[in-house]
Image (tube, rainbow over all chains, first blue to last red; front, side):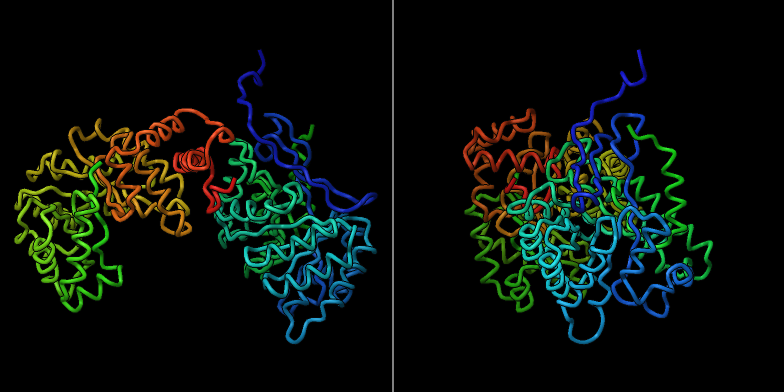
Length: 304
Length: 290
């Protein structure tokens, strides 16, 4: 008799999804156990950590610590992305479309051309994240989908008011999408049902929204945790999509993180690790130092 | 299932305007329709009635002018409540008292004084309990108090407080557990709840099926009455035993996993809805589409 004889069999497996194209791809998801429960069953792989790159220079009040790493490359998304991969070993890059929040007319073609340059420059797959303005995001992501056809990007966020147009473009050009819901498990399911009416289920990632430590992280934790319960324990087919989280940008908005470098590094690392334990399959981080800490902690979990 | 018609309530534009203008006609019209539709009680919800406690006795007289049904007087204002109770011809139902200190002091004694039935919710000074066990604990204390001032269990209608399923599905599911326990913790007590609360926020055209299925599910576990949309004729038919095949299917869907592929669209909708109100499936507004 072994300890494993006493384990209950789980009903569901988190979907696997491969991002990128041949020669530079990363696969996420695939677990048939709760997050990091490697002692209970098959934990196919560790969560993936991406580093974030902005497509426009960050504002004045951007954290000094992040500037100390990337101050020399903030004017070039290509150089910034290369530094993330070559110097800091990022497995994925998340390109944040900060340019969409700038004043004035948005040149969608130029935004898309920049994304393509980054995609061509780095040997890792790309996540492309809009700024959360449903119209600006939709216009840009549709063009990016077209210009980067075949790159296998992960595009988001899709919200209930723009999901159809972005998902149609993603489907046409072979990308996956991120469905974002405001810390609400029922709405997360609702979006997935709406999307899967025309979009392949295995090309969807869920963003249930991230809050940083001290700013509502516990809400994110509860929602991630329940999503995994519903997917793995109950086997709900509409909830087996992997989860993406953005602890980097959220953590470095906290005043506590900005005030003191050591605080900031830990703030991001602890937010990330906590949400990985809750169920994030991909975490978008900002500081290479925080990423290193999280990798070290995750290294203690065995993957079969 | 005893049905308390919810249609005369302050949040309705027609009702609110009629109350403001002291215009009996629209109110009597609703009361007549409720009576014909098959309500067992008519709920008269006048809100807090702070500035105008005389509104409730006026409304009672207006409704009694056209209907013989007993009334559920629905306000948290004890002054308005007492004025309303004083003019009721049939024994009314007080809706509602709770375990809050102020309610125990001012509302609950009215039930003893007027020798009438009273809805007592699980609310206490600590707020709304979060699950079935803490609801049970809260209501036991409150019922103890009610008994001590001369209100027997038989005159108490326990209200476990329904929440919208889109906000708190686990709480909706916990209602089942609560009703299963109720006769053990309060033998002889009756029960009720605001059924339509459950579907608040759900797509308008789908609220009816949620309400109807939940009513039958909770009825199976002993719920005595519900405050309902009586103008939903399907709901009244279900409550009054005119849809035995549907009820049987609902019971079966609670007990076993039914293969939806073998069912008609009407039956499939019933089973899918049972699966969300009993917590077998996570709720979403599109629960009927999958």
